[in-house]
Image (tube, rainbow, N blue to C red; front, side):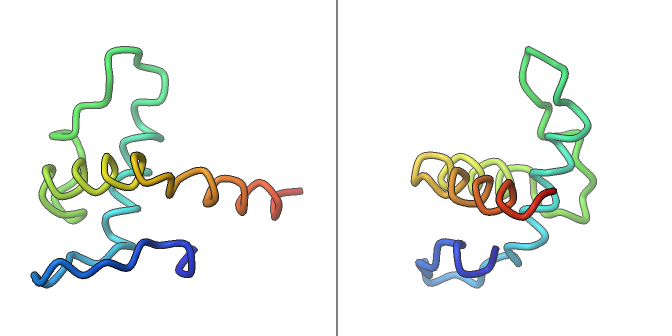
Length: 78
């Protein structure tokens, strides 16, 4: 997944992408059956600030990051 990650430094030290991705996946796993949206506040604090996790997920979704990631994962699954 590392080669697929966006690499645009913004001048501020970034929270580790792996921690943020784990936070996003935590929300997706825990709340995948809710149709009202995931409560970003419900993620454990070890994944970073909720605004960081949400903003990075939103920015990556708009940049088209997730589709190649899911396609790569699908190719490797049995």
